Amino acid sequence: MSQRELFDVAEVGERKVLPSAARASSRSKATPAPVGTGPVGETCRTCAHYTRVVHNDYSYPKCGLMQADWTRGPGSDIKASYDACRLFEPRTTGPDNQPTKE
Ligand code: SF4
Image (cartoon, rainbow, N blue to C red; front, side):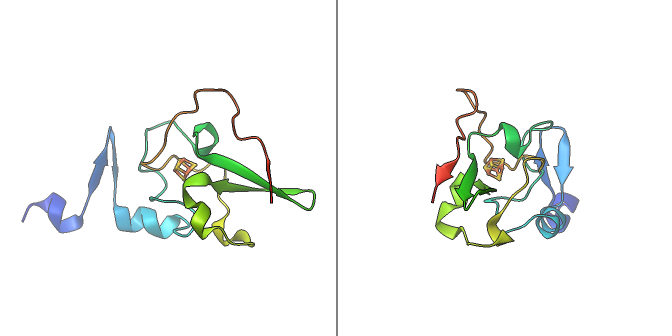
């Protein structure tokens, strides 16, 4: 078994991430993959899946890929500043994350 397999190190571009450590620092119910496993320099803010849900004059940042698991609490909230996960897709049409009404 190689050292890489032994420690389950995922390699993403220049960045090496220990999935278990990344998972521990991520909010696993909020993101489809550990934060920091996507393209270096990208964040949820620049991802096509970044969504803001508006409810009662507040908006809650969510990952659109996790919609089936959205809660009505902070458990499924993400932060725009999160380093992108490996399912990151660049936004192509400006801020297409207009608030959605619940
Ligand atoms: S990078 Fe995109 S797909 Fe990944 S958690 Fe953030 S918004 Fe979701």
